[in-house]
Length: 483
Image (cartoon, rainbow, N blue to C red; front, side, top):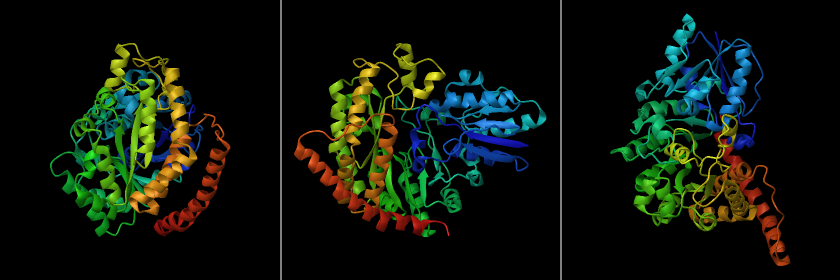
């Protein structure tokens, strides 16, 4: 039998697929492939690289975030008309199941390991159900990702070492989807899977690679040391919380094993805004701790990719611009910024729905706006159009080419690493492309001296960037490329 796995792409905005360097392999579909019996022919169609065209299959299985759910429904309609059985899992299917069932023959909720084998058995017997609940599984039952399905030119290999998060931030659905308890894979098993990867850069997709459980630091050190001892020549990045910088030995081995930078949930510099979204760890440590956290990470040559949000309940217009200034003035190296979005399955969605604050609710059509670049709800003091106009102005400022280059040189000064500095600069360029897609960029304005100064600065730094790219970055990629 033939299984076609589909990773749909939002046609309204390209987002991470706007550039090949940010097209991530759908790791969930790699797990589904690993759970599928060997007598099935499995093919992956990733719309990050190719648009869907009808092809023969017995089962067409979709994953999907909220922003690309409508596209999944479009493709499913075509497949169902052609007589193929459609099934969808992933975060949106788990959080908004009733809607998904209107467009799919079968829906899988929860974690695939607890449902997919039963679905395959039932399909082969001609007795499929409409709904399969995978629940939360024993981490020992999570297979290694089947990587032979990834035929597209992905820049990164994705690896998961744990699931679950106890924090329950208001804007996040991870706790609802994966549970409050950290479930950790055996370190040796993770290392064995890492040895199966072929790309020079790895992204550990854990929501928090170094958790808050007793023994978490020791586990992280064993993982990083294991990478060094096995001679893995990888560069990697991951997602962490503020506690990542607490243990100097963790930082040492993270860098020694190839860590270039970490994505850290900063969200805001204001205690009131953090309280709005229940970012309790940051509140507990205090916003004044950010500077020291960044300094410790920089000391080991790693960069900080900070996630920052605009549009919390207490935000006024001046607070948005103050947050933009905080981004520019702080020592964070890269900034992933977004407008607060009420995703299904979050406390925020339920609260905004009960208050009738959500204005973009023509579902499923409006789901394509739920990508963090659009305002889809009212806050206490700002309407969606005002929010978007203010945030676009901030984005034009913080993602200005000269501003990003100044960040890059500050990163170089802080980390003493050309690789980290260039990685941070490239990442900021990617976020600029994502957030400013379709937003017109004004030409440099101001006094004649300011215009001349900016043009001279950009011309000079063009040469510096070219040298860094040719002598450092491309050499690193060639060195790490599989022979």
